Length: 213
Picture (cartoon, rainbow, N blue to C red):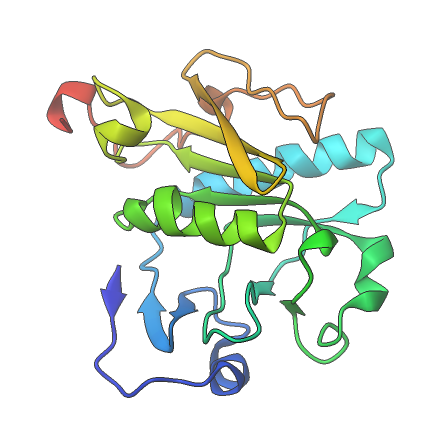
């Protein structure tokens, strides 16, 4: 993840310039280059496909937008861009910006947010956990397919892990799933998915856990 060296952006300027550019987020007015990779896009795409199948099978009024920004706090210059996000179509009418920009400002519109971990793992495991809980997102997945997170978050030895966060009250409870284990989702009870199912088949190999301690 790289930070640009330009002056701070307003939320409105960021939306005008970068709303449809999946490479960037905004954090406290700073433009953040998320530096997407092919493997990360592979994992995100496979996750979206499997979650979309579960939505269709359950006949839920939910959908996965191609592009979407979250504005978690009206008084902060921050715009998040989850790798996968599930929205409730019945709640979209209450979103003040949606008709003109792909921006979500109400936590109740979101059913699930998914972040696929890259080198900025601290943000996914710490700051976004706090932001998404305060915003009221009921379920948040941290898909650490390379086992990059610190041992305080994924344990030792470090290994590929999916952390499913469920909002209880104002805080998230967390469950973790490793390779070979079915991912249990409170939102998608019919979902049959393992981390193994979304890993890249080709390209760079996952590093062994003893290489990333």
